Length: 234
Image (cartoon, rainbow, N blue to C red; front, side, top):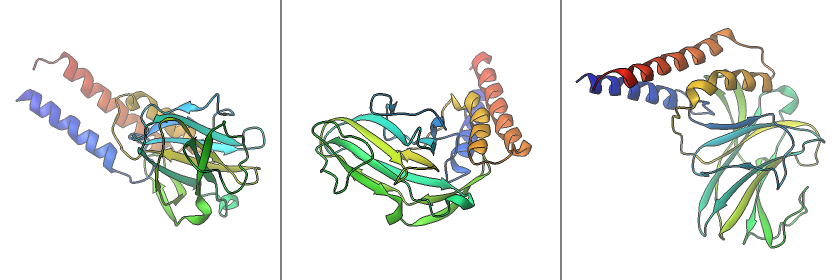
């Protein structure tokens, strides 16, 4: 009976953090990086499960123009791609692009800002062609212009890449997500408070003590609950 009660509380918290926001909830997205260093085909962020919701925030500059994800897929796998732009006035008209690069894909109609490996092609997720909405992520208190997601069928087996960039180069901030299966992760208990601070800095927002407090508070409560479960008899 006591076990069922503890399990019920855990389920309540898991539902709370996974359902409180439809945007990029840092409790259920795997936050790959926030404004990290330059990446390329040999230094792409490896995504072990492309069906799980993974997200990265990138400030494109001439020194680090692209954001690279790498993942393995097999014939007829389907991936879900989505991008967004921080709601900052200077980026109102920014329309980033994500290129899906891999074996069996067609040769792109126009040149890409990076070289393709031999035998590889690419298809584009172009935000300029997508519907856009405005959404606020409640845990971090940030707002994005979010472009509709797209499912892309992969025609071959091998190593694939998802590459985000700003057409024409130059300055621009965007986030890029891969996958849509949103799951609460135990590792979030310790990483989310720091991630919230990093995301707010990326969005050029000052630290919101209330937002950070509640993110930290929820992490502490869940950590304490798990500790009790670990030492309590069943």
